[in-house]
Amino acid sequence: MVDIDTVYQKVLAFANKEQRGYVTPQEFNLFANQAQFEIFEQYFYDTNQFRRIPGNDTVYADVDDMLEEKLQIFENVDVNSTINTYSVSSGVSTLPDYIYRVSKVQSVIQYYGQQRTIDCEILNTKDFEAVKNATSVLAAKDITPVANIKQNKLSCWNGTSVFVASFITYFKKPSVVSWGYYVIGDKALYDSSTTKTTHFELHPSEESELVYKILKFAGVSMKRQDLSQAAQSAESIQNQQEKQ
Image 1 (cartoon, rainbow, N blue to C red):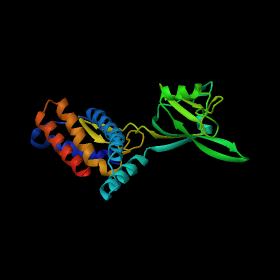
Image 2: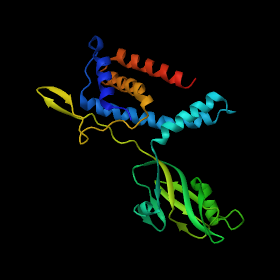
Image 3: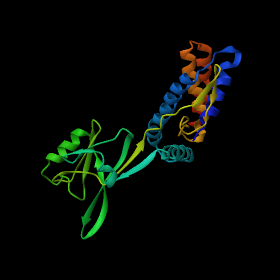
Image 4: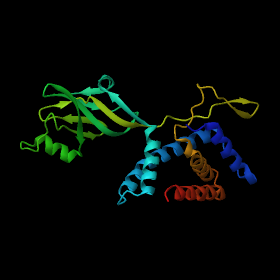
């Protein structure tokens, strides 16, 4: 978790330096949510990029482990009892809004008298339809089920029918952040009560990047190119250091 008031105070201190401008709470909350989502989404691109690097040297392993640690904050599993509360029609499950990206789909089957949890291979729509229509050894079976996600709808196929998954492992969207406040006179003062304030869910190491991104957005909003460029430069330097 990253404390939202700490980030806001740093943003204000930097933006007010040399009278560059004031970031209102409303503007900060808007920029803060955009910054958090950009950082969160970048994890997936970075993971894909680093896993394409040949070999597995110490630097790669360190970066990959770091990204995994940051993503684990958002990883959850919905079990069958929860999945059955989704909107389900003819075995097709509509994924709820809190799911950002599905990483694993599993089914529970009886195999030689024993209960087993089987991974469903997640296929693109073309391959999924091909497997559904296959009549050869390529056809799906209970032991080799397949899955497809199209327009936020999850379909699982076991060779004979579409079925509801037993487990869905996914990354949830970050919660909407909010710097809560109350006003005395014309001054906004921080309100730490949980009914008004929601902190960043990101890893603590992301505090600096949050500050830089929010300042960059604020500079664009205030038409202060110097502020935007300064924040962009600081953000770029930090990103380069992290990925070396």
